[in-house]
Image 1 (cartoon, rainbow, N blue to C red):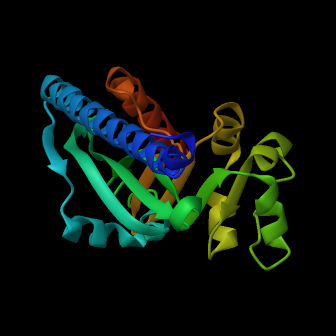
Image 2: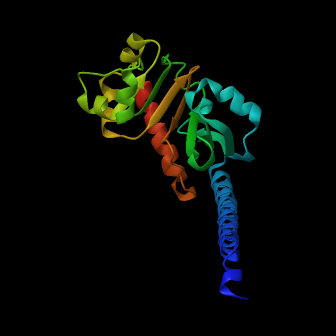
Image 3: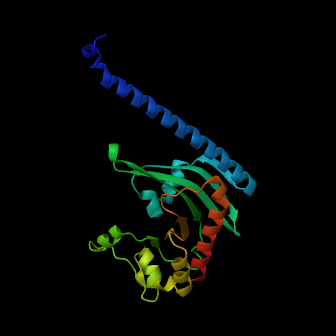
Length: 227
């Protein structure tokens, strides 16, 4: 075959190689997720938790009171565990959602611990708490107001706190709570319907990190309980 005749085939060869590479990547990701699920199932058994590989859609609907579960599109939940830890009920799941589309799409994945009724006794108000980024400061110009505390510049520097009842939120975030979060950064916490959702945005706990993650979220819950 002449060089001139072979030239039109070159683009098709590149496309074919790219398609094979994508296929291999997708298969490797599939196998990796299956191994992860199996490892988390073993963790759940050791802890005496129940385990479901897929989160029922109706459960995701009931979690809609939390802001996280309303974000983006293509929401999915998996590796659902239920049990008791630190003397209280807890539900742990992996949740993902997608923002954007096409080549600019991005899938956000995180391990989330939900403590049903955790804020009922202490009557925690509804709020969202998360790491503060420069674009959050821009958002405040458009009416998304951050609740800052002059008594804790470290907390206000690292966290964005919002909610409908500012006075109730300020009462709930006393010196102990502010001090805790000033020293423990990177958490996202939501209070809604008397329950708490605690996670690190876009971070999934590895199977070997699951128990420490659960212990850390329990510490967050206790700090908020103490007020």
